Length: 130
Image (cartoon, rainbow, N blue to C red; front, side, top):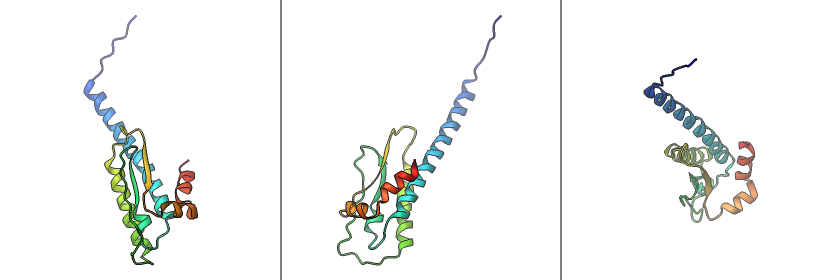
């Protein structure tokens, strides 16, 4: 007894492409959820800290760094958070998450360590992402 199977290469390739697109969409949704947590937990005074969040593939060396020195205080919290969220979403959309093995959220503001020690922004986001 035997069974002969013909594989339609075009059909398989099309299905793989759709699957990859679904994976990209799902992974980017997870990353955007983490970005939301980071932005929502970020304190806003001058906006420097919240606007310094970055997402990039590991090893890229990329990252924003805004100092709060000399900036006006008591900025509009909602608008600064939306601006930061937009930046992170754009960075997430630009990454091919199926070929990048790891990515990193970081904040290179000069006062980032002090903010993290006080507010645990990244620790809270990490705990929620589990």
